[in-house]
Image 1: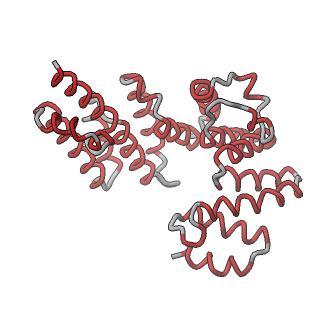
Image 2: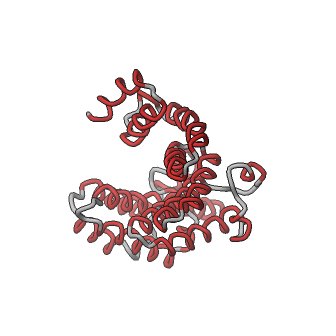
Image 3: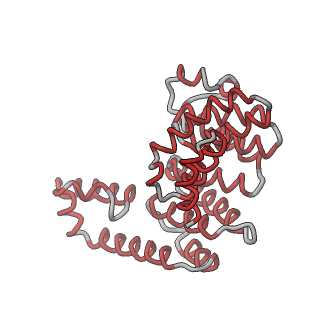
Length: 276
């Protein structure tokens, strides 16, 4: 009866959010969860997996975790933690984690289609494709993602830019547009790359696509446009923490912009923090 319905509801919430998810805010649901041995076992398994990911010191250790949990219906949170751990271990000397990320995401998305709808993991996947130089695949997957997310087909996407994006009522994602910007830059199409970087910046007002739009415009000879964008990207960095940020890439972007804009006092404050 009612107890069974609550247990089913709690179990669905566990599958979606994991043992540390929002369902613990619902006191009545958590009461039933504590009484369910099946859910308690699942919670312990998820906690052990997260602990193992956190302790992993090598790609080989992450490979073992990925293989051992492949058949488990893990919450997206845990899958993304595994992918992020791979990303943290990737380097120019060892780019293999990028291939592992792409393979892992594709396998998880095939086995559990709901994971394909999860935005963060899908964004990580696009980064992994670009890092491997699989630009055509990255472009196709990005376009498919935008079609799924915002209902924009390829023809409509071609007309999207920093001005027209404000008229679009769908759910656009700046990270995905930035992935398209990166892919086209790798292909050598700076004009198309710039369009996507600018549009991604207009959607989410985040500094990553913004600084790339600045550099692309300089490379294309659009000096006035680059100089007009630079203060806006500086503001985006400020909103993301500014001088108080502990994010290396935010600080690095501020250093670059300080040089571009001639903000040498600001440069003197930010450069030492970036280097520490």
